[in-house]
Length: 78
Image (cartoon, rainbow, N blue to C red; front, side):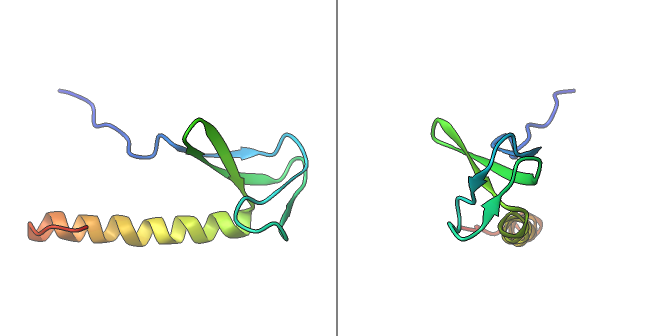
């Protein structure tokens, strides 16, 4: 049986290798060793602090739930 493909290939959680700013908010600082959500966009990875990363994942969970509901009801979802 064929394996299902993951739709989360462009997302990872890693420890920051250096000090940097959060890609969502320049006010949020990421210190070396902090947990960071990285999202692949185009050719690079963009890092988000744990606060912004949690909000991104909450939004993604809502979107995934909507897609699941659309599949279950056999309707389109934009």
